[in-house]
Amino acid sequence: GGTKGGGGVVPPPVFQIEGLTFCYVQTNSMYFVVTTLTNCQAAVLIELLQRLSRVFKDYLGVLTEESVRRNFLLLYELLDEVFDNGVPQGMSTELLKAYVYNDPVAVSSTTGLVGG
Image (cartoon, rainbow, N blue to C red; front, side, top):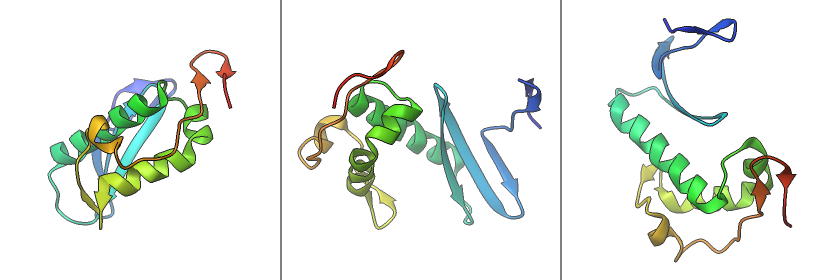
């Protein structure tokens, strides 16, 4: 079980439903989720999600639903560089800059779209 908040039950960061394991982290109002049918170490999956959200925030400046929507192509390119055949590779923002060619579309954290 989880704790009550906002009228609903908040699930723990790792849980199983019918043999499928869910792991998630919440960054601002965004949820990063990974699912697996295999027996994986949950701490590794949570670390992966935290690093991925950090890289996204480094590129976008602000991590919101709007910034994800406006920068979908950039985030897809980042995912393509971070994972090789489903296996995580380097997640350093500095390392990724050499391989990622799209520029972010600026979005303000409070007022919405700022540029482009």
